[in-house]
Length: 466
RNA sequence: GUCCCCUUCGUCUAGCCCGGCCCAGGACACCGCCCUUUCACGGCGGCGACACCGGUUCAAAUCCGGUAGGGGACGCCA
Image (cartoon, rainbow, N blue to C red):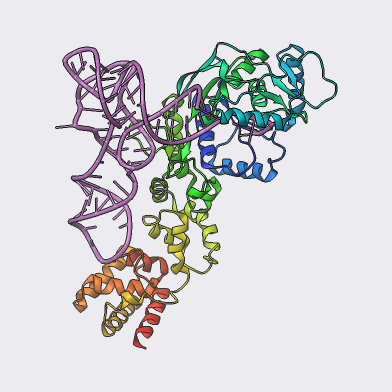
């Protein structure tokens, strides 16, 4: 059996979106699982819309996700001579012909056909033309088989059959001499010896045409696997109006690549009741044939849950590195402040994204500029002053730095003064962080350090005295 | 309009190929309880689906037919 060769072939007309990322992931997974080759090919035949920026954005998304390719990136624009040559071959063999119909005429005929409820296919005006019609502009059309059917066994959808009658003579070369998509893919997939084509299912309708092209060209037909689309919450095709669709946007929102990957692989694919998959487990368990046949809705809530899971299970050192950009975007530097890894440990259980973590980490590096008045109002001033004073005093004499030891200290303070934990913890939390939503008192103090803690306590005490 | 595809809890899905173990299992979300110095985490429990109609069968989510709904394609875009 020959080696498996798959490819991901995005067109550089935008960033890498989650749908494309999932297709890329499935390709990558299959290649890794089968010990095959994963090729990256940029489909830039649309000179009008293809941009270098898009290519870079796609590459950036791919590498952030860690979907490394074995060959490429190849650019279709580099193969123009080859396409030209193959078009000529088809022309010479009578398998393609020149068509002089004008685009506008065709457009009209198409609209008319649609209006009248007919299939808007090319009427074959130039199909039987003899010889060249001078130097009038022309496109080259593939002479498609008229009768019979074209069918293929899709790895995901099963057997799909099209009556050839539904397929018209598609254009393979434009008036300006450039080749069209359906033709390029076939040539490229054939020359790159792709054995399995995994792509979005918006391509199923193109598949029979491509198969006819493979046959006309004398190439072996690869296997096909069409993965269902990803929908937005309203079940319409996922687009910007549903929120972020760019892979890089997810990175910037503070998602971990393994969380996105895990989410994406479970969209349409499953392995029993398993939800969490490491990269290795995905590779080991993935099977293209067990990808579902129906479209699925992108659900940010679940992605968030997975992200929280991976945040909880990542090392503080790694998170620290990933968190830095989110912090500096907020104008915060960790210089001179608490050890970032210690801060992260207090936040790991509570943050769903790195953005959220950065937000919650802020007070460690910037003493509160104001306090949550409503929360403070639940205690009377005398009590507040007494608490801040007692804690400050206790801390001054303490040599401990472990969260558990500090918590024990607070228990002592409660016992000594006949207070309940709620009467002490909450005021101190407000004094240290400004608000009520923060890690445990012991954790905060340990990360902040005794000196800084006392400073903030004194500040808060002054504040309530005023 | 024509062709192609799809249809299990709100969402992702298991089960479907090889009917009975399924008055349908898991996960996210939601609700409640517990834990608790806040917020979270965690634990426990709850809510909640086989699109519909026929057929085959002792028995159907599973097989067959039809209906409805949804999506995709129909480009000198990819």
